[in-house]
Image 1 (cartoon, rainbow, N blue to C red):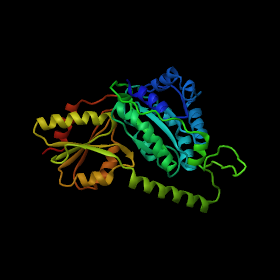
Image 2 (cartoon, helix red, strand yellow):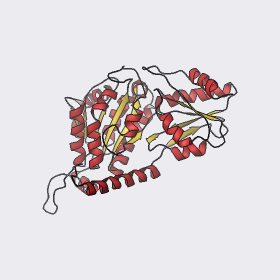
Image 3 (cartoon, rainbow, N blue to C red):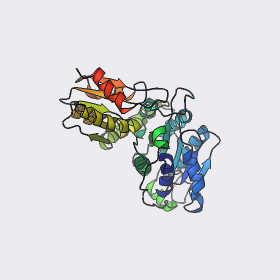
Image 4 (cartoon, rainbow, N blue to C red):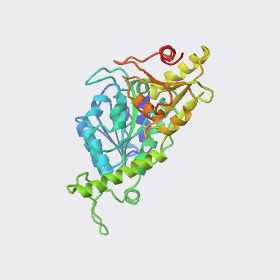
Length: 353
C-alpha cells in the first residue's frame, strides 16, 4: 500500500479516537482511506473533514485537551496554517499527532516532494520557546510504525509529536506489516492515564482548565523553565538514528526520510568506485542525534549532508560536528528528487581531494 494509506490503517489499529483533517496533495489518501474504511462503524473512531486546516488543528486541540488520541495530517502549506494551534498545544502541554507529507515551497509551491519544512518542524514554526517531537520515516513500514510511536511519545511527555514525511514516502507503494490492533481506551482509562484532562466534572474532583495563557511574568517564566526541563529529558532519552557501513567509512552521508533511501544507494555506488562512504540517518529530527553524530565522525575525512532542500539539516550537522571536519551540502529544489549518482558526484567535487 501507499505510505499515506499505511498511516490511515495504523491510526485505526492503534486506538486513535479521532482524525480531523483537510485534503491537500500529496497526502489526501490519508483522509480518503479513513473515509473508505469507516472506522466509526467498527472502533467508534471519529473521522471528520474540517472546513480548513485552521479548524482541524483546533479540533485536535479540543480532543487532546480531553485526553483523547487525536490525529491530523496535511502537507506543507496546510501545516503552515496549523502553527498557531501547535504552539498553543505545546504551551498547554497537550499530546497530539500531526502528519506532514511535505511538498515544495515556499507558498503554494509545487505538489512534488520536498524536505523544506525541516526548520518549521524542528525549530517550532509558531510563537514562543517550544519544541515538537519529530519522527522522519524513510519507508512505508515506518509510516505505519510511527503512528503508535508518535502517540506514545506525545502522551509520555504531554507534547505534540509530528511525523515528517514527504511526497515520495506518502505516494510510494511497498509491502507493510500493519501494527497489532489496540482497542481504544475507555473513559475510565483516560481519567486514570490523563488526570490533567478536561473531561467534565465528577463529584470527587474539580474541572481542569486547559490553557497556554498566563498573565503573571514570574509564573510564565516558571512554566517555560518547566518546559525546557522536559525538552532536556526528551533530548536525553528519545534520540533515534540508524547507520550503515560507517565503521570503516572515510566519508559520511547524512540524510533523512526519502533522501536517506537515495543516500543508501549512493553509499553503494561510492564504494563500487573506491570511496569508503557510510550513511547516518536521523530518525528523530528533534531531538537531533548531535552527540551520536559527533562521536561517529571522529577520525572521518568529511561529511556530506544530502537533503531535498536548500540546506536546513546541514546547520544541525555543522553544530554537532563543531568544526572537527569539513561539512558540505547537496540538495535539489523545486520538487526535484536527486539521483544517487548526483550525490556521489557531489561527494567527489566537495570533499574528496
